[in-house]
Length: 422
Image 1: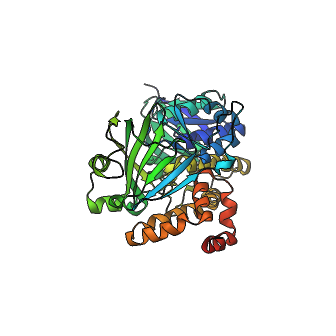
Image 2: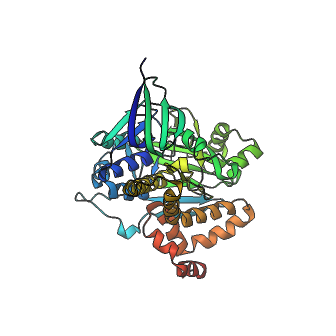
Image 3: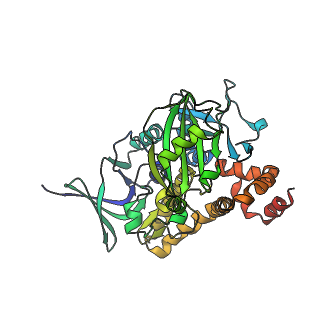
């Protein structure tokens, strides 16, 4: 069989939100690219399924029509207006993404949400449909990369289709936590202190869901410094799961499937809510590479995006927003590379700087709060202080919506006022 070599200046690996953001931004800039995914869409992606205001913000900058259309996809998404953090001893922090008085309404007087929850099988397929409409994006689905060879000017990637090889000047690797490219070329490896194991289940008939579909993050002692989540979905469904840092998992030898089932059945906070709940799918596991340390996420002829760059928030597990942000930034970096005809690691390093300038303060705060959970005796007094600190609760809310967050975090007086609770 004769092999076919496809040549492209820019290859995007992975058609999740990070890869799609990169491909669509490149398309807007008039830069053709090839987008490759090993799956055929629609495909499932094991995830918490929460779509934060960050995601909306990024895609609105790329193409405002996307979330105008998504707003009316009521059959596949639940509108969410806030987040509830639950801690032991009945202590919780309830946050609207926007001040309750500032929630917008549309022309039919329906409240406009700042976030959503949608199964990734539906949401990612929704995004991919916009890729299919762009003439300058060559979308190859059902193509798995099996071998990566470094060339003098770029890479040659072999696929599971014997007749297909792809040669490219630059790779944007957005192919997830198990990215072959990130491991082999980016030298990104799992570090138990900065990684979590998680399981996801879908339930029907969970009681006590907030009327405004707040997502729920439950920090229970059995899981410290991890958490259990309940995220509402359409048709009386919910995405329910738990995550725990891998070093803790190994030390405690936790079977996560059994632990999720046990907690929902026995824990006083959940057992009444799940008495009539019905499991509608298998409990499935996945990995979460945290952005709790800085890594080198670019090099000669490549950029890493999203989970492949280990950019997941270590406190909340939120990853889609940071994937979308990094995908857009990667596309903007590509534009500069093409203009300067410079694909060197030294030139690419500007991408790392921009990503961490945008995200690091936020990731660091989440890391510090996660570290607090290593000291259970400190949790209650500190959480009480946070719950009564308006500026800190606003900051937590901004982590989901990205409202003026960068300006706040860059202003030294914000931290002074935070400490003085003013």
